Image: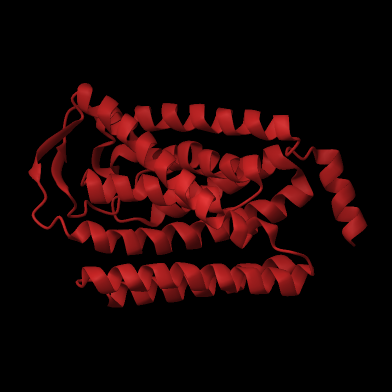
Length: 275
């Protein structure tokens, strides 16, 4: 029941955030304000429903860790995507054609990406992974939630099965591992935001089969689709998969050192005690 209530609440606020950001589209400053406000409201709704249904401190969105987690995550996401697109460019899969026609749009994209990253992390890591882990343990929950995360991207306009699989492996694995390592949502929210914002607002690349956005740079993909990611965008590149796997492994190594991995037997016992 707790899972259902939390899922419904987060899906509802995600839908509302999407509608609000969509209405502000075309006004970059309004998009920024609405997107950031929608992200903040989504976190407050998540906090309230988890606090009410689980009767505990909602430490995964603790205010004292918000600034540091978001900043570290965003910087990591920007640097990581820059490294990936650099490798794609060196191998002929990406080319900068000039400055973007509307570089100020990068401001509006910050709001859009803030709302999208926050609501998706609350849904897939805060609700889905966390409840799966209580039943299955860390490893199976990671795989299942990552597959669900990738599967949702099949709904995008230029979706491909390979692209969705790449999102599951690289994005789903990396973001879930970031949550496991710190047992908080701020780091994966920041990481998700930084990656998506760099991809769209800085490098003008297509994001998960949703089309390219006007950003600071105008660009085009070229050459082998395995390198460039083809019509799905750089997230379907083998370089994205390689980077995602490496970062996932690093976060899981850190999680193991911190004792944050939950084995199946402990998960079963936790579930039994909670009944």
